[in-house]
Image 1 (cartoon, rainbow, N blue to C red):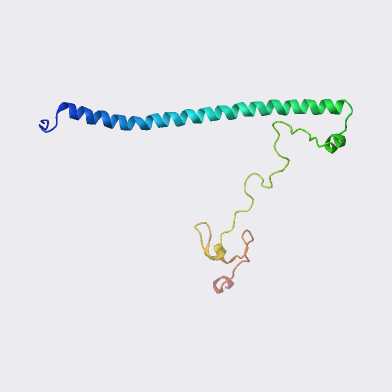
Image 2: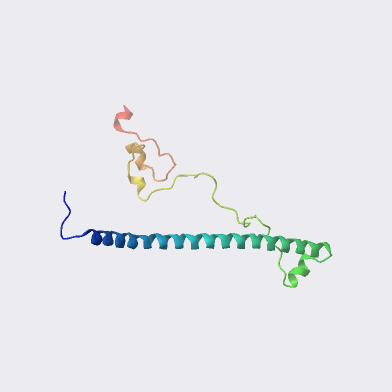
Length: 141
């Protein structure tokens, strides 16, 4: 393969350097964004540690006030709130239990026949409720 005589070496190198420079801008931008993200995560971690210390100080001061004879009602009446215990979730309990109880009913499923259902099971109107035995003329003999 021969080199085209219309392009000299300096022109080819200049084009290659320009292409590399253009692509390098994206790496620089990516690096700056990653650094900003890491800095922000570190600030969040610092703020979380500061909040934990402040919560602990609040709990200690509240306990000291109670130990000094103040009542919860007096403190609350003064506009002071009880500290939130660190590491505790809200008191709401999940209504959902582990696993799923009855399988969800598909709309129109009562008239469909799946692989695990026999055609006479499709006549059941309530999922999970066995249908009455079907008798036919052949069974009566």
